[in-house]
Image 1: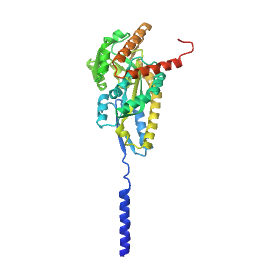
Image 2 (image 1 turned 135 degrees about the vertical axis):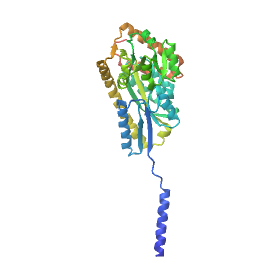
Image 3 (image 1 turned 120 degrees about the horizontal axis):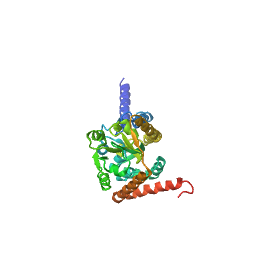
Image 4 (image 1 turned 45 degrees about the vertical axis):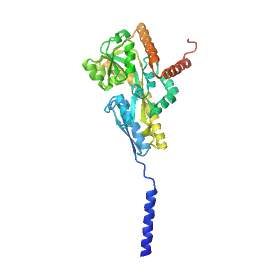
Amino acid sequence: MRPLRRITAMALGAATLALAAAPAAAQPVTIKLATLVPDGSVWDKILKTMGATWSQDTQGRVQLHIYPGGVAGDEPDIVRKMRIGQIQAAALTSAGLSAIDPSFKVFGIPMFFDSYDELQAVLTKMEPTLKQRLEAKGFVLLNWGHGGWVYFFTKQPIESVDQLKRTKMFVWAGDETMMTLWKSNGYHPVGLAATDILTGLQTGMIDSYPTTPLLALTLQWYRSTPNMVGIGLAPLVGGLVLTRQAWQKISPADQTKLLEACHEAESKLRSDVPKQDTTAIDEMKKRGLNVTKISAADEAGWRKAAQEFTTSLRATTPTPEILDMAQKERDAYRARTAPRGSN
């Protein structure tokens, strides 16, 4: 019996040593993602589908928890919480991305782009540079988000820029650069959190704001501002970003799976959102929205004002090279796609 006991003890000891030497099973990585997109909206549904794909494709090694509708605060709050590790990811608009790096302000310039195709061409060319700038600040860009085309919604009908300048216009609180730009160009900006827009409309703090038709309908803001200026301002550009610290906890193989799902989400947004914006305008018109037609003379005034805004930004931005790059790529796209024989 003693030899048997000795052999059993030796076997148990060897097994214990083997277990001690084996690497511990990797713990699942939980990513907390905050965003302003409304719960149940097209953006929220696509994010949730993406999160389910993350979990499935990584066999549960990466889990995504989404906090929609601004429950984690406005975008500057979300960025701050990412920096201190309270959350790891965010789906941000260009305003939130600008809180990380000012180069993203280029996507807030009125009437800089004329089409989604033009925007996509510029994003494709600039993506490596913009990714590097985010990575230098400790963030990883996973995909682009598309919010639709931005228009001004107002309490009273607006046709001209001069009329808009007499309104109290929403501008994102905390973005002093944009506040100064709007003021220096003759507007009356009021700094508010995006989560306070409805309250601001109800209390009279603001009476105009830029947003996409789909958001105006989804959040019912249009009921307080039943007029939409009939000329588009800009595409609402956003991005899904993750902290570098959280990204490095994910294995390279799983990182690849996450990026594949993010690419699918980006393609879905690019396909679905523009169509839903058109539908949203039709729905709001049925419910009393007035889309103010803009005359050729007034359109020229809007474009002149947009150019003045661009010039002002060029003179004050800390990243003029980014604006120059965007303008170069935009103009190159226009030259490639211009009809033959046009000037």
